[in-house]
Length: 218
Image (tube, rainbow, N blue to C red; front, side, top):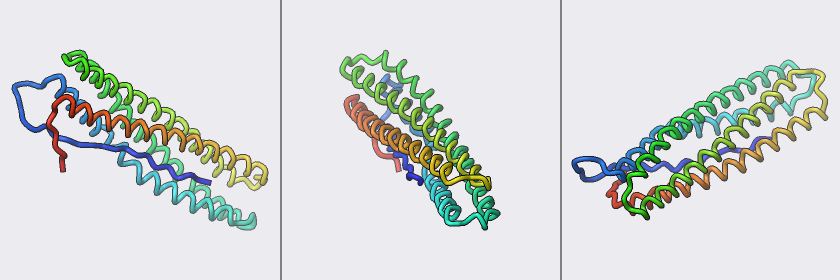
């Protein structure tokens, strides 16, 4: 029933080498972009727990559908446990979203620094970077909405399991709704990952073209 969700976040951390009397627009952009990375730390931290919660929920689901109505009390207990896991997934998803929203707010500051760039080609590169990141944020918004919708269907399923009047037809219809929802989640996730990869590649290219000497931070 469940489709495993794995969100790829390619985070890169650097430190500037060298120093000068004051930050250039290029360096201000750099500092802001790396602060964006830090603000998405919570986003990254939610990924493995979400996957583990999905696995636990799938195990409970498998147990539930293996039981007959003579074991209804056990079905209710397992469905309540599964419902609690779904609610925890929702909490972590909202924490993930808050992290993205914080990084989005910080990222908007980059536009002010771009206006101070003197190199026209570099300005074009920076604007392309903004476009990619805005597409990334937009795709995440879709992903978040689709995942919330899927979670809503999960909640309904485990509530339905607690009714002795549940019919096979109702169950099949709800499972269909869930699978359709997760298909949308998978599609949105792939788009988000693609924009993330493109953004990170463009960010590194911008650093290089801007003449920023950066080194990997351990």
